[in-house]
Image (cartoon, rainbow, N blue to C red; front, top):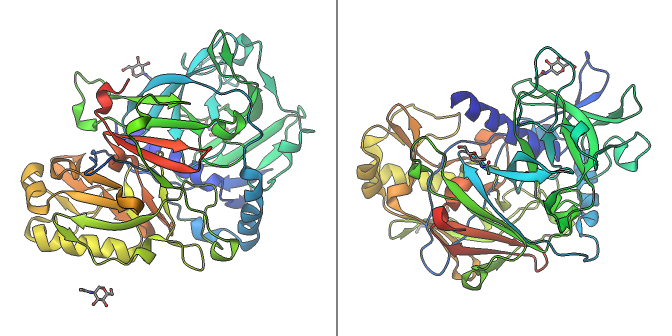
Length: 466
Ligand SMILES: *[C@@H]1O[C@H](CO)[C@@H](O)[C@H](O)[C@H]1NC(C)=O
Ligand SMILES: *[C@@H]1O[C@H](CO)[C@@H](O)[C@H](O)[C@H]1NC(C)=O
Ligand SMILES: *[C@@H]1O[C@H](CO)[C@@H](O)[C@H](O)[C@H]1NC(C)=O
């Protein structure tokens, strides 16, 4: 479990930064490499929405390199946002599935012809999707059976170097690509722990049923990573899975992690297209900001929402709404991210939360303890007792929409009898944004209504959501 968690941490990291252009040239490498540093934390505890409906958001990661992005790269990113609008409407997809929830949302999607089920992390914080392809390099060690075997698919093709997508760092797709010996488009990047992930850009179909399949989509085909899961990139970039199939909406319902029985991961629901429960959802608009208010820290491809306040117990914390909005430099944006495990707040907001937690349960705080480099409100002992001292927590959004996190679930079990509040400082991840992670999206339907540029939340028992 520990190594799984570590991998995810870095995986998510990778993804996020990848699209935010962190590029390093490494002396030992022929290619330009992107370093991705993403952090995501593991953990989960549910949120429950209090009033009308709920919502959640996810996001994640952090990169210690975030601040090293160059101005030019940021500019490219911003310029490219124009490319974000999906192509004209074509077919509409309807597909429903379940996913396993640990620190991430793991869907299994049918890819190729005939379809091979591939496990992928559903990530609303990143753009490029990729799958784990069979590694051909070491014939003596067979690849894990769960990886994708291109030779078994009639719809698989490799992207040649001549494809425009293969130009190094085209805007809004800042994957460092290069031409390999076979004149194929090759990409590579490093995880924060120094692990290299690399592969080819390919085209492949998703085949949902005999009557429903996508055209061939651009994906990464990872040839030598240690992970056995891919990524389903679902942000607003034009190369995300959602954009490439011109998806109108998608939704997921994150189950309570504690509900784990018989060592099986809890299962949540996932819809591409219409969700039959959506009548009860409460919606808030996705926010956009003028370019003048974005540089250098704003991510224009993220799902940005209007968080307006935080309550702990009956008390509304004294945090100005402006803290949750991007400032002149684009810092302070609030995103919903399925690929980030915990919630991260900028300094001013975090300090107010911590102050209140210290006021309510200070003597029980585990002094000097920090989990995963980010969570520093941790306790020994009975989490229910601590939860009662602290009370329910509520994330308040525009239009009176709220996410309620019950006191019983305000803390996550991080092992060894220690429980931590699922909130950390954005700074600990090296990011300047507020990120609402999947820990705070439990037992809520979260719908990304792309066609109407809004996000909906609906209270649910996610273990029974499909
Ligand atoms: C969830 O995990 C189980 C094994 O515990 C596996 O059989 C199933 O295919 C997984 N589902 C997804 C969506 O990954
Ligand atoms: C991937 O390949 C590179 C060399 O091309 C190697 O240094 C690295 O260790 C490999 N990574 C894995 C996970 O196999
Ligand atoms: C709220 O915070 C602001 C600045 O952080 C401070 O000036 C103000 O006095 C605070 N108000 C209350 C009621 O504590």
